[in-house]
Image (cartoon, rainbow, N blue to C red):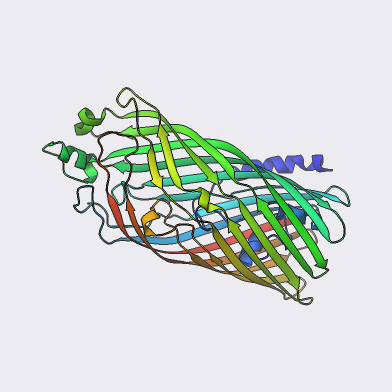
Length: 452
């Protein structure tokens, strides 16, 4: 019975909640890493293959194909990024001072957990905890783009129970609910050197790190959504899957901490904390997948996924009033993202009863329309995935999955001009970050599957 397995669910829920994502491998701030098996195929066939508990996320209709089992996996992400400055300038047209290059990335671990169990011949239950969206970049406080971004972090934990119903031997349907926790931190420097220079303060020089102020916004929220799926078995060797995941709206509420240098207190008030908020929506997705077994050794699969990034037209941060700024303007960063598609194909080869080998390739479009809308918080661009993986059957009850991916990211030009000061009247805008990112990502993953 399901109730007998609740202690295992509780233990794994507690464990996974301690780990959070610090890098993003999908376009925008989407996290693709839901399954180690799927990673080996570059997530080709994701909504049709239904081979492990990650089908809770990719297509809950596939739960009818699974036995009682649980999986715990972890993905180790190693981004390699470098920013090179070309012609960055401050708000009065001079060169911005500061560190000319920075990478902004760090090695990270992204875990996931899944549990599945048939209830009867028609109905199956699944439960998953993973990360669907997230981002993290962090630069030195004195880097040349500090007025645009220092730390940017979005952590999400998605809790997803689901049910599947087997209509007949060909068709199954699935439905899931998502409870998604989001926690965000956004920080950047404030150019008080230029403000003091324009105000005639003798010791002030434009865009000087030692004269900067600092702003940090933190906030969190719970949001809710759903996912739907359909799985159609044409023959014992061929099936198609269609899956939809709804958008989830978050209203992040928290605090904005301001650090003001001493010389600028007469201009902007003292260091202080005030309320801050931002609305963020994780987008809807729609996936169509196919899976076909050529013979007892070979299988091929494919997927196309649409993501509704066009709803992300701006990042607007609102601030509460304080005695030194009773009517602060919001901080508004235009984004103008576009809807995108992800294409992938994959192949499996049954080498022996113990070993199954996997490979895949994917092309992931970026929603960022161009250099003028690209920011150092999310220096995103189109990317190509090359994936390898394997599954090893240890015994009747246990198996291990392995995967490795290298992601090639197109060279990424950026020309980001400040259009807002974060609600501080008088602080000049117009600092422009002009340069290029070079990036690639290596990823290794392992998963233990227990069938009981």
